[in-house]
Length: 178
Picture 1 (tube, rainbow, N blue to C red):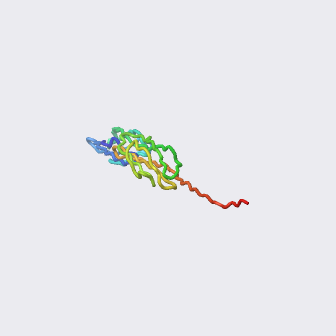
Picture 2 (cartoon, rainbow, N blue to C red):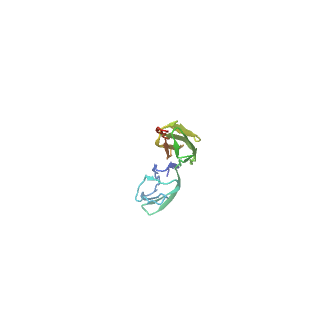
Picture 3 (cartoon, rainbow, N blue to C red):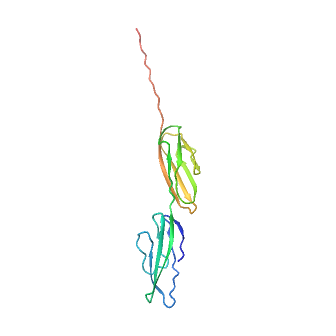
C-alpha cells in the first residue's frame, strides 16, 4: 500500500490498500498504526490516521479474503516535529536595554527561523543565529521563535521579558540656619 513516507506530527495520513484476491474479494482489513492507538478494523480501504508524537512507526495491514486467506504487509512512517528552543541572557531588563538570544532549536532539515519581539527593535528577524533585541517600552514583553522544516512542519516557543523603567524623583526643602 502506498503511503507518505515522512509526515509532520498532527498531519492526517491516508494509506490505500491495493490488495487483491484472485478468485474472491477482500472481506476484512485490519490496520495497525504502531503508536498504541486502536486498530482500524472492518473493510476500510483508505483509512485516515493522525500521529500525535514524533518517531518512526510501522503501519501493518492484514487483509483477508472470502476464503479466509490472509496477507500482511508493513510500511514505515517517519513522523517529524521540529523543536523551537532558545535561551536569553536575561528576563528582566531596564527600558532601552538589549536581550541576547541563543538558538537551541533541533529538527531535521530546518529551513526557516522566524523571530519576533513585542515593543523591540528589530520587531522581526530571521536566521538561525540571530543575536539580540532592544526593548523600548516598559511592561511585559516577549520574544517568539518559530522554526519550520523542509516539509512545513513547524514549532514555536515564547519567552517572557519584563521591561522596567527607573523613575527618579527628588524633593527639596528649605533649611533655615539661625
